[in-house]
Image (cartoon, rainbow, N blue to C red; front, top):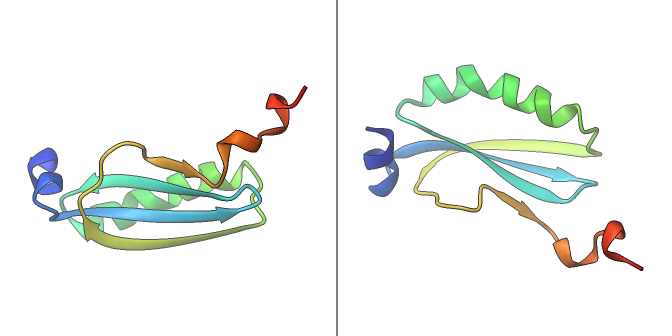
Length: 82
């Protein structure tokens, strides 16, 4: 049912933006906004454990596919430098 709702753009998602590291995380899909809002605090706590400088979330109805994590620039990660 969630996949159908997502495909139709009727699913609820949380868009979570962090800075330092700069990334956007998508959490979902959920059929009901209330179910998303009940599950969201645990997801945010998990992200806070990574100690971002800031974190902002928005609940919205949309359709999402992969990727569910979008980094600002994966090409410039320090571990890639030689």
